[in-house]
Length: 363
Image (tube, rainbow, N blue to C red; front, top):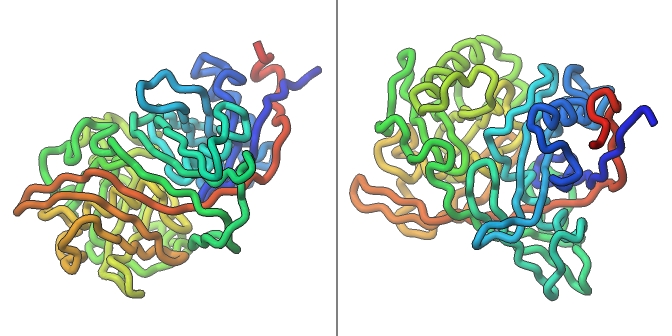
């Protein structure tokens, strides 16, 4: 054989999709693993013609699962973001949308057994250390994908998957506000550097001369905005202790504006070199914390929310994402306990994905 076959499930998780694999079916060495994932996805071409990627950052994501040795979790979820064109792999972040498919995938792979009509799957996000409880419908001992749950950005309906996120504060940097400030001024722009589920640099859209209601396409065509935003993001990464982030997707970048369609606030989320067509699950938690915490760039946009748990309705280019946030706020003090969401996933394909033996011989 001139190619190496790797067993995989191809799944949609939330508003992303990609291959889900057993970690022990892949190279242990991270450099070799990166080469395998690049080949698998087809990174290096704008539409990933020689791989199974989809030519966008939300379709070049990968999940690797294993039984966990954690005292609490039963499944370890290791995430990798593969770039579309640059042949790069970032192992630093996690992805909340791909996480949605972890419970179903672990059951499909036989890593855990079903436990009745609903199976609770305790997941550890290896990249950040976050712990997540997922509730997956398993009537008759099989994962159910049919249902009436609908999420903006995905056509049709599917079975709901409930997620409760814990231990999400400071996972990458060790603190909610790693710079020690709730607002830093970078290149003349007020930025909140915040680490909740995903390190982010968040600003007001108006400070970039934007409304915050632009479509993802309109923002991606506005190269002047990216030319202004990217140096700020890189500087924010340095201030947050993340080092040189020029080739890393962390920190992500976000924009806030007053709500337009009845939500809590309008949001735009960048991955970071293009705009997310909807909103990342991890990003939704970070943005929610920014909106609820006093003294950030989000202050004043969610003044109507006074009690916990709070239902955050985050407007994004394709609709609204709802997040339930459990928090405490006392004057300027703020603490986030957990965040919950309902999302959907679907198994799209199963089999083997192939990479050239010159990339990896399977040993």
